[in-house]
Image (spheres, rainbow, N blue to C red):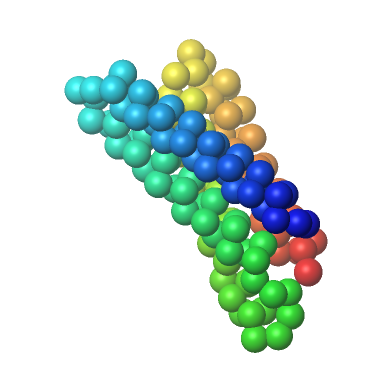
Amino acid sequence: MDRRDDARTAWLVGAGLLLLTLSCGAAVCRAAGDTASVAFIMTSYVTLLLLFACLRAYERAPAAGAAGGRRDRLRRAVWALSTLLTVMFAWRVAAVMPYWPAALVVWALAAATTVGGFIALFHRCP
């Protein structure tokens, strides 16, 4: 990868983070007065930023040697953060389902996603 590709990638990442920030800001403005919604939006935003930071650190960490322990810690952090986001969104979606079987399907899909992520990260990745 040359310097132009690095600059292009950095620009796209910056634009994506700016769009995420503006979207969360707009959502907070729309949810003004609803403390639970504002807390959900802000927690989701911070969790996403942490997840992106951990993924970037994981990608940049050397695969073998002394950094192996660091990669394992980052892998666990990625799984924990993605599981937290999955549970948070499942909670919100299941709460608005009109019937309990639909809410049960939402929770079953969240559980399958969490288990699938665990298998992919800890049993399939080197």
